Length: 163
Ligand code: PNS
Image (tube, rainbow, N blue to C red; front, side, top):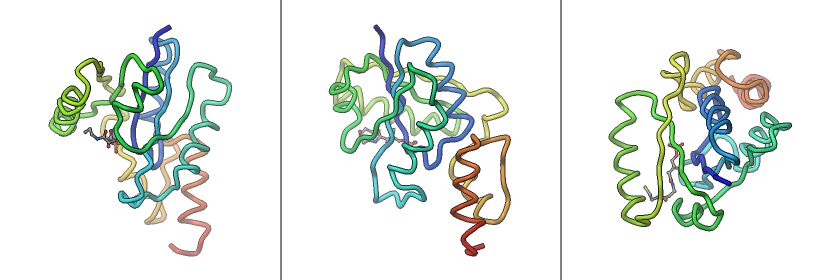
């Protein structure tokens, strides 16, 4: 039984994340999405909202679980019995940050294993940050985010009268 952890902020989850998760779920017996609880990052969605959206998207996929964590990722990986941590790598620009994080995680726990997966090309330029910017300015990206995320972003930005 091989279990992978897919950590991130997921504020909100995009189709790029979904692509990686679906592919990872065909490689591993179980994949847990680990949503970072980090109020200092000033997230748009609360942890509960992010977890609820991800649960809705993967309802009916028994080997994709959703949890949240605070503190060190390697400790959460150990606590949950994960064999591997998965991270997505979109472009060269992601590499330096991911490399630094991977080396720090190795330092903290030399037994940790980290695997990088490339998203499909149509999601290579996609980021949660730009998605939020587009919706905040009145646009929408139904091809790039799951339905639940499109709905919740519209609730936050379009239905509030906030612009
Ligand atoms: O989606 P993100 O924001 O790129 O995800 C970043 C994440 C959650 C993987 C990273 O911030 C993280 O692992 N945070 C937990 C704190 C930690 O373990 N830090 C030390 C290792 S760099």
